[in-house]
Amino acid sequence: MSEGYAEGIRLYRTGQYSDALTFFLQYTVTDDDDSMDYLYYVGLSYVRLERYEDAMLYLEQVVTSADVAESRIRQCRLLLAVIYAVTGRARLAEFEIEKLVECGYRPVMVQSVYAYLLWKQHKTAECIAAYEKALEEDAQNATALNGLGYVLACSGKDYTRALSLCKKALVEDPDSAAYLDSLGWVYFHLGLLNEAESYIGRARQQQPACREIGEHYRAVAEKKLAK
Figure 1 (cartoon, rainbow, N blue to C red):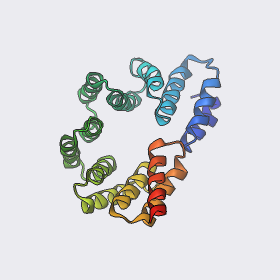
Figure 2: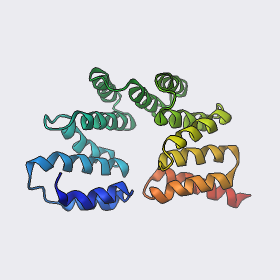
Figure 3: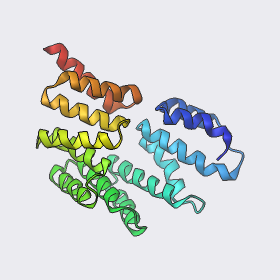
């Protein structure tokens, strides 16, 4: 990768996704070897900003290239599966999942993505079953732990287990904004607003541009004011 990308990558990794995107879009790609890295990071930045239609244009080029590492193609396929689901392209989402299975991607990750797709389609029971299957493959997988905990909390199925699962996920990755937010959201549903504000606030500091985290933080603040 070109050294010229270093600042853009730093901005991305520190959660400054809008600035990272601006940096990359202004960057002039002069080396063919760097073009796939450029497409990759622009696509990731668009994903983080929830500009999914724009993200697809870049990530689709990555997965169809013959000059990209297999691990990166798998990551982009996972992202595309989620994006397709969010934007109502169920068949394309299923296609990407099938491709991941064919190339031997870890079953736990495929199951976790599949569970997320089901959640976005409001198929709560099927979503929970898929996350349970993912945890059968790997009981310590942070993505599956966090996903199942979040869904259980949002659906009011089992707050006690939701709390336990989200705590375990955070132990696996203490700096994850997503996991901090999920744990805080469980506390919100339990009525423990100070704890909710603490965890979601930390998530918000890490990813200030994330709309969902922002919505959660506002919900906590409004409920505290109403008391």
